[in-house]
Image (cartoon, rainbow, N blue to C red; front, side):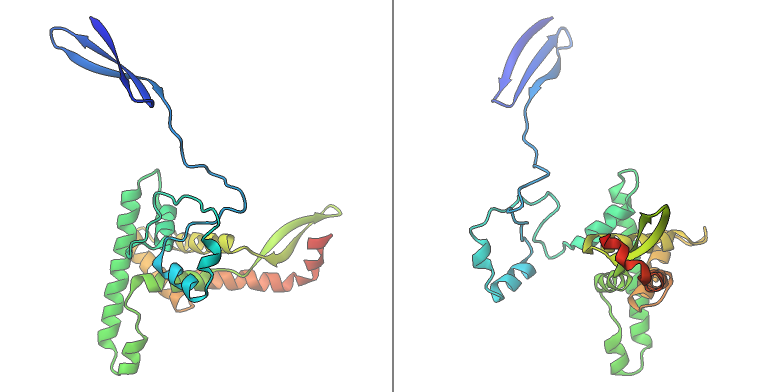
Length: 240
C-alpha cells in the first residue's frame, strides 16, 4: 500500500490511499476549517431587508438613506427576495415538520392550501351576486395571514409568586410570542381530530374558521382575554 499526501488549498488536507490491484481511493479529512454564520451580533447591526415590498416602504418614508451607512447582518440561507417566498409559510412549515422531514411537512401544507382553494372556488361559484363574489378570498396565503392575525392573543397570564401564593397576573405579550401561540393553537386544533380525517383537510377548515373569526382557536384566544380581564386586580404584582 502506498500513501501520498495531497493539499487542497488552505481549507482541507486529505490523505489518499491506494491499494492494488483494485486501486481503491479513500479520502480522509484531516483538517477542515470553516467560518459559520455568527448567531449573535451587536445591537447596532440591522436585520437585512431583502423583500422588495419592505424596501418600497422604506423608500416612500425616506428611511432608506438612514439605514444605508449602518452595518447589516448577513441573510440566512432561507431568506430570499423571490415573489414566491412567504416568511409566514416558511415558519408554518417548520412548525408542522417532525423528525426533520421537511419535504413531508411542505407537501402537507401545500395540500391544505389546495383544499382551501377548492373550497373557496366552490363558494365563489355558488355566490349569486357580485358583492358576495367579491367577499370570497381565493388566495390561500391571504387566508393564512388573516387566520393567524385573528388567532394572535394580545395578553397573557404570567405566574407570579407573592407570599407563598402563585397569582395569574395579566400582562402584555410580545409579537414573537403571540405569533408562536397562534400557529401552535392552530396545529393543536388540527391534531385534535378524528382519525378518519387527514391533516390537510382539517387544517384547511381550521384556517377558514379562524379567518372568519370563528372556530376553536379564536374561542381559545377569547378565553385567555376573558381570564386576563377577570384577573386584572392582580396586575400591580408585575411591578412589585
